[in-house]
Amino acid sequence: MGPAIGDILPEAIGIAISPAAIIAVILMLFTPQARTNGPAFLAGWVIGLLVVGGIALAVSTGSDASTEETPSDLSFAIKLLIGLAFFFLAYKKWQSRPKEGEEAETPAFMKAIDTFTPAKSFGTGALLAAVNPKNLGLALAAAVSIGQQPDLDGAEPWIVLIIFALLASASIGGAVLYYLLGGKSAEDRLGTLKGWMVQNNATIMTVLFVVLGAKLFGNGLGGLTD
Image (cartoon, rainbow, N blue to C red; front, side, top):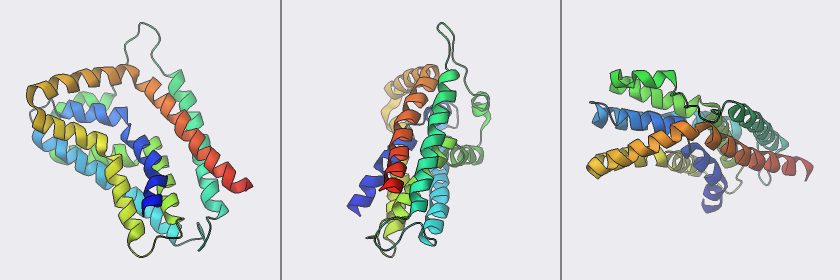
């Protein structure tokens, strides 16, 4: 399973670097229900990734996305298209960045986080994990990569998917654990991180989309022309 985990590691890191989700969970950790809403958000995030990845993995392993020896053109085409989509999203993010001297706006839904219940926190985590275009594309790409591994048998593809979801949740889980265990110093540092991410969200996402888009587009194009 080692090579399969290595193949999906960039996608997992790409999902873990999700400024909007990190900002949202930090805001939850500054509310009166932090100790319930934070873990609920984390649980929703993990479940959301597993649902999307599980559906894609079931489809890819049950179709012609791979043969017994080599991946099919379909799997490479999916990666190429996701790569192109990421280039487009990079352009859109760069266009939306705050101009010099402007303050970045916090997403509207985050202004109501003080009123969230654990159930709503869970649902928000699941939606940010599974519906966000970047995370959806990366989860699909990772599931296709797992499904096209010819040396994974039985339950092994599903174990790799679970590992992928856990790795992709490292930033959210790390913030929650740091808050629960770190005390006052954790609150101060998480607050500083939140402010930096709000202001630099567009730049972070632009760079991330370009890097991940280049990887997926290169993998797809290379496979189709090999």
